[in-house]
Image (cartoon, rainbow, N blue to C red; front, side):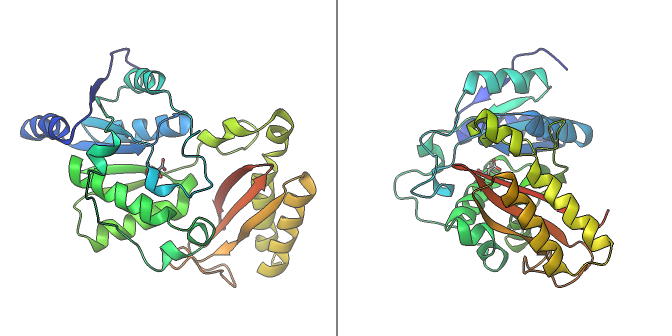
Length: 285
Ligand code: PAF
């Protein structure tokens, strides 16, 4: 860890000036898009970038377009100073913090929609979410023009949406998916875990336990439908209020998978009180 203060830029022009200077020096550049409220999951992306690039730029923008009308845009935790200090301490080189007008100036009228996978699962339960994500990620990639960009597998469907959009739009960047970072009890790190009450926090790791039990049952030859049903029962019995989805999915279509196709993923979203948690694991170890 270094202790140097990170440089902050707030405009596309300043971002491009820094990135051009690095490029002129022959540096390989990594980008880490974030909405702030950073935790060890984000810092693992910094480490992944530092391992394969010469310069790491993080972005911090709470993107209004990916929040639904009843979601937590206004209350989403924001702490720019703490995030900047933590990124500097982890050796990131630059932090881009655009304001809303820098990303969506007056008259902004373009949206990037990834049809197909973007319409499934999260796309069903959070209408507009993936169009918001795809639009801002496309903008950030075009503004920074990195060689590599890093996303967590916790948002597995988001990672696949980002891969699809960069291929479809010929954006010349290598997308890296980084493993989920978990608490000691298995809860996947998320900025939204801060919303959990103490009793909810105690229940939360059951989601991952149910996914592991699902995987074990599949390995034992239990049919997908039965294994999914048993996993859902575990989650609801633990005290989760509602499950949006929990099953085995094909990683290219995000359709429910009838059997253990290569790369199949167990994905879940469930409500604990008023907090929605998502998690996923590969179906094969
Ligand atoms: O995963 C996130 O934090 C956001 O969806 C992202 C990729 C930064 C886009 O706003």
